[in-house]
Image (cartoon, rainbow, N blue to C red):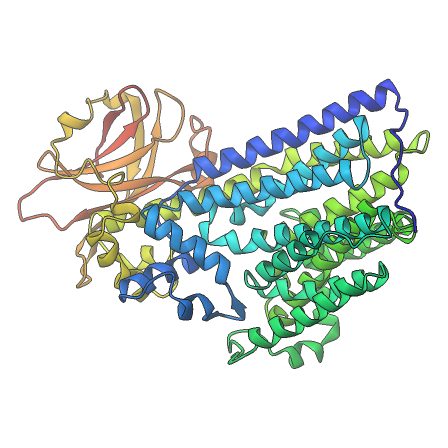
Length: 574
């Protein structure tokens, strides 16, 4: 058995120029993803992100072994919980560490794939640039927006990186055994492969799928020591995983899902085909069937590379198998949900990696064809262009989530715990209500100093007054909140910064001239844009909160306009 490494292909000038364009497209996609992370940042935990704060609030250590091992739904999330603990203990629970970790993990995944193209595949020049651009586009595609702006989702990106690392280490172990058949290959590659697989297993339930894949790969490569290592470690790891395991009642029982194979396969197909679906598509079932046809057409010639023991092709095939198995495992546990749930943006991280590997496998198989390479590159650029046309959809969805988080921040910082607003960050409002005192006492998250610094200060000492003509908007009737844990006012409406032709950056409320309330701007109100010709954005809605005023006190609302310094523009009520 000989390890095959291709020589650098002779490419035309057209192909070389197209490869630079594809690489540039990938880099621009990274930039858009980074822009999405920065502009939609919120220091407030979201949904499952509250679990770590809850543990600390009840007096337990976020690094206690019992807590790290405790099931979260069907997952043993030892590594992700450690990330959450680090963010809580050393980064004030502001989500910065978690969001940075997610972006860095995707960068490492991209770097590992690019490195593998060169070392395992021998890709150089235009071929490598095309592959690197495709990988960047898929790994940072904004359609997976939930995983990019939600700190807890470190658990969703970590298994794919560790799986790729485990497969790469196995192939390096095999290549060394082929290059030096009379010597025992270095054990460090095998140890790294096992450790990476263990890390994936205790990041998300899908990580345990690595063990049968690694055993099958080791058998195929005739690596006896590796086969036994993976088999024994996998059996022990899986047995530990299921020790005192309790199936979550909120999800479908595996037996019920397997008893409805058509629904199961539909969910699986929608999951994998998610990156090709976009808003307003009428017949996603047809798309799924077409996608399966395209997949089979692409894989037929490409999988021949695996049969010839091409290392990089085997890596891609293993990653694809892991992604397909992950989608199937998700379908078994979530088949009771609607098919629309299969198109959730958080699942697209796995689906996009799958399609990335399909594209790379096909690219490597056709790059030596005389005209195939240019045709493939043109198709990739067409996909990139289509993605650019549709990018406003995930950007809008991320912006909507960001508005909800900023609205909750305004409510809790002003001590107006509006239940309708709190449930936007966690459906059961008792979770944030029980943990917010802990955050406030320890100056964590939104209470760490950055949010609400204006409260209690005279308006004129913080914001210069803007001309009333610089803004426009409408205040809807205020809602009086009489909840026992935070009475006050909820003020809604819309506002527009006429001076800068954009929505205001924030809202502030004053009571007798002193800032007592805060608000968030960015709610999507498309009907207003249709009715108000001067509006160039639909994200003009706002919600603001102010504590219950004393009798005879005067409450006023101001739109904060961007500038240096920012200014406050008075919005008169009805």
